Length: 126
Image 1 (cartoon, rainbow, N blue to C red):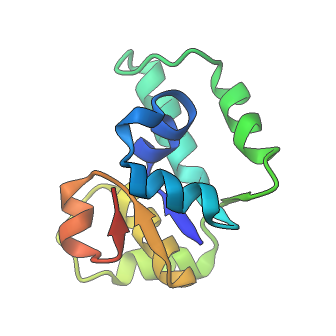
Image 2: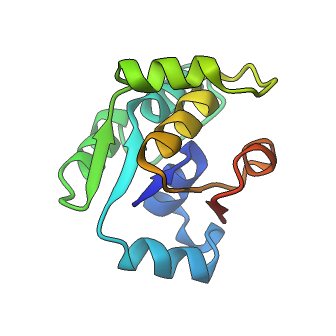
């Protein structure tokens, strides 16, 4: 399993060349990808603030992933919420905290280019 950070969600859908070939191979060969629903929330907020444009409507992007059998879209359950609060990490971005807590819950890697996440959570791929 691999948890996709928000940037990886966007890159996998629209700019696969931004992901390394090793990461693409791992994603293509992995039997399950996890996307936190918080990533879709973050994308929606950025679209509304005009900080991000994507070639699809947000609902279409969500359905693109949600209808893929190898993708599990996971809302933050109580375990993830509590894990995100317990992180010994001086980082205020709640979405990043949920993504890391989700990866911890499943003991898996995160596909991300975010240096703050990469320094804190060592099990990452680019």
